[in-house]
Image 1 (cartoon, rainbow, N blue to C red):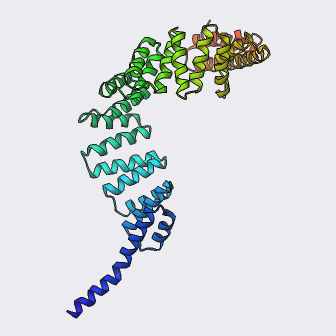
Image 2: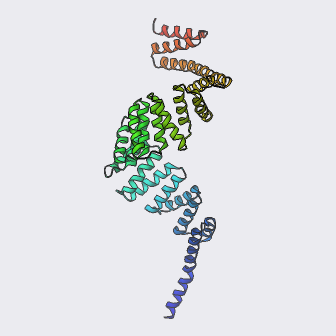
Image 3: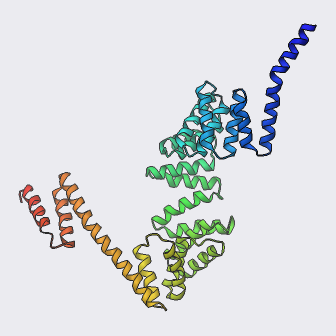
Amino acid sequence: MKTRILILIFLAARFLPGIAQTDQVSEMMREYRYREAIELLERAPESVENQLLKAECYQMLYDYPAALDIYESLTAGNHETVGILTAAADCASQAGDHDTSLRYWLKAGELSPGNLYLQTKIAVAFYRAGDWQGTIRASEEVLRKDSIPMLLRMAGDAHIRLDDGLGLIYYEKALERDPADHLALRNLSDIYYSIQLYDSVLVRTEGYLEEIDPERTTIGQLNGMAHYSAGNYPEAIDRLQNNVILGDSTYTTTYFLGMSYFAMKRYYEAVRWLALAYEQAPQPDVNLLYYYGTALSRTYDRKKGIAVLKEGVEKIETLQEMLFDYDISLAEAHDRSNEPSRAISFYQSALNRRPESYMLLYNIALTYDRMDE
């Protein structure tokens, strides 16, 4: 009996300090004293539990690289449980290391095959890592079991990146599943807008704004752009003005709002919004410079209008210089590809831009000579 009491005393003396220390760390973490908790854990005996607590403290301090180092040391020491691997994957993603995150999610998936949650996270990890084929493959595996709208949209994005013509189908499926998926609607409308199917954009975006969320500015912006491009200038102004009221004064919104006013010959209003677009554009394009400068010249600040128009002329002249270089490069590329007729057409285009470039005449003659002409 006495021996058993002595053993219990010995065990208590050995383990109770560790328990008390863990409780103290937990208390510090509850009080957001993460730095102090880390210092205490540094002095504590090394254990998996203490290492995980330390990693959690680093994550709460947004020091994801430090937390990731701990997770990597644990997994290197044969502690590859699903819980530790998923924690490491999340931490790597927060640190912006999407390739490492994907590696951990794949390992977790190997330990728990058929786990729908892990399969979904693997698909997302492929997407964040920019692996489009992997995104499609992993998404399809999940979609065979459950048509998750987010994965349908991600698969659509991946197909668009691969330019295989299937992206639209997936966006349509995502919206069938979840009509409120504004990201899928935005991507789908962007495609329709780029191929000038403005009516399709208008039908989709107006339905969303009327039935789901009238304050979604990204969709309102697209609706306004489509109205402008379709020639519905008053409707474009109404929609884009509403976007401004909702706090959207981005370059795209102010540009199309200014352009809509310009199209209606309301130059004073056009100047106001095109000026905002001009201020936001690090490198204003030729169109903006032309319409902003013209609007200024037709209102009150003709000197500034002339200055902006001259800026546009200088940009055009710069582009002409670049086009000459492009013609030369294209001519040489076609020449090396054994397409002499195409090469000659680009040499002649370059010569039209710079008639004084006699060396181009020599290149054209030499190319004809190789063609036995």
